[in-house]
Length: 282
Image 1 (cartoon, rainbow, N blue to C red):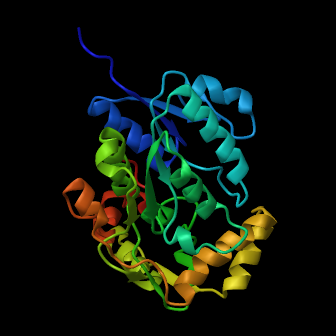
Image 2 (cartoon, rainbow, N blue to C red):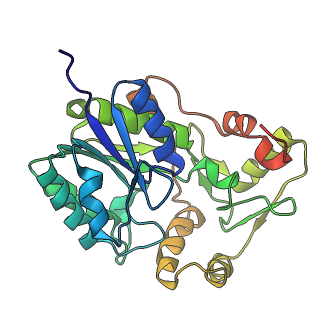
């Protein structure tokens, strides 16, 4: 009699890494259960605890993505992890962020890492990705009228492909024991300026793309005016401030160490996603 495949709950299952992760797990023998407020296998809403038990039913491993566009969520996550332990989850892979241990007071990302480390009935792995390359191909840092606008003061960042993040997450969920307690800093293979990113997009798309190194506070105020929560300003200030001060992500070998293949370069990503800037159908 065949042993039933383990089931992994993938929070943010319709998002950039979660959707990719679910496909990989399914191909490699784990049943993924995607969870999101809409469009996933099960409905999951951080603000509706009634959706949590059904999402966890029969699950033994979890891809944890915290509430988006917020900075205070440690208590919500702790309550959910309590429930997950009771439901039988025995491994958690947490999507954190680069240098989470250096997050300023007021951002709960480090508190969630510490919470996981304190639990004895579950193993855990922590993924700390740099800025994601997909930001430039969607509505996070889009090319608008041929311009990328973001504060950097000429600093660099080792932008990472979401597909690489998902690939590492898959390995940790496929073999939790091998990655128990691991903290992986996930980056691309090169630290780039935003101007270099703009030049690469221009080269790949065949269209002129320039970079506007806007003042950091002006950029944050613009985000707030566009509807970003005022509480989230501290997160935006921290993330952009790391690049402005010269402390942006630097290349690590963690993706290759875990997956056995090199991290994706930005040019490779851009060539794969050129239609995002040309408007051509795939």
